[in-house]
Length: 384
Image 1 (tube, rainbow, N blue to C red):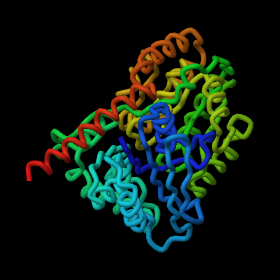
Image 2 (image 1 turned 90 degrees about the vertical axis):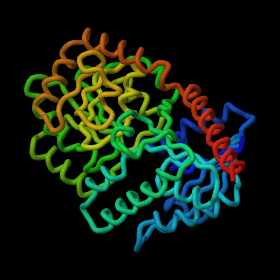
Image 3 (image 1 turned 30 degrees about the horizontal axis):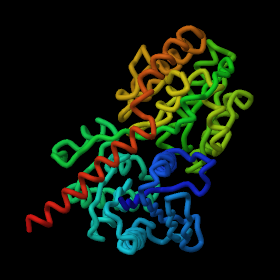
Image 4 (image 1 turned 120 degrees about the horizontal axis):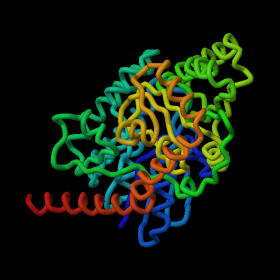
C-alpha cells in the first residue's frame, strides 16, 4: 500500500514539539516497522528555505517551503502546493491530519481519510488577537466545512470530536486513538517532591497564567511546590505576561521555563514530576495526559474538550471546572501531599492507557481505515 500523510512533521525526530508533530513522529515509527508499506509525508513548512525530500527507512518526507514573511496565511498557498505534490506522488490513499491537507487531497482526486485533531470553529473563537489570526482560523473553518462532507472517511480521535460535529456526523466516521511512543511506558520513577509539570506550547489556549495563579495558591499549603513548563513559546506577548506575573508574585525560584524539550528531556520531565497539570481553554485529546499516565503519573486538569475521555475524576487524576483555580490548587495539594494516593492513581491511569494508545495498535487501526477508504472510492467508481 502506498500512503501519503498530510501532517506537520518535526525537523528533528529527537525533539518533541507536541501536538501534531508528536502524532506524526509516532505514526512514522509505526509505519517504519511495516516494511511492506510505502509512506510519504507531505508538510508545507516555513522553516525550510526550499523544497526538500528526505528518506527515513521506508518513509519519504516531502518538506515544501512556505514563506516565513506572510501577507496572507500560508494555508492558502499550502493547499495548492500540497495538491500538486499529492498528484505527483499518486498514493493509494491520503491521510490528512489537518483541514487544508484534506482539501488538497480531495482537490487532487485521491481517496482521502480526514483525521480531525482539533475543532476548527472552537479554535477560531479563541485566536482572535490580530486580524491575521482571525483570517487564518476562519480559513481553517472554511476548509473543514469543505473537507468533512467530501472525505471518503472521517476519523475522530475522541468522542468529543463526534459530539462537536453533531449532525455533520454520518456513516463515514471512524474512531482511531492518538499513538503514544513506546518509551513513555518504560519511564523510571524519579519523582521530585513538589514537582508539577506542564507540557505544551506557551500561548493563550494553554492558559499558563491560570496555572501560575493556581501555583501561588498551592504554595500557601505546600511550600515545596514548584512548576516546570516544557514547550516552545508560541505567543511572545503572552509569555511576557507570564514572566511579569512570576516576578510580581515572587515565584522566580519556583517556576522554570524549560523551552522545547528533546525526547530524553521530556521523558525525564515525566519521570521527575509528581503531578501533570493541564489548564488549557481548548483541547481535543491532550496527549500529555496519556503520556503522564503511561509513566504512572496522575493529572489534574480543567474540564475542557475530551479530558473526560482520558481521566476518571478521583481515580486516575482530578478534573475541575474551567477556570476554577481554587479547586485546581486544592486537588494539586492533595496529590502533592499524599504519595500513596499518587501511586494508586498513577497505577490506575497506566492500566487505562496500556493497550489503547500503543503505536502498533493505532497503526493497525489506521491501515484498516485506509483499506476501507480505498475500497469505498473504488466502489463509487464501479457504480458509475
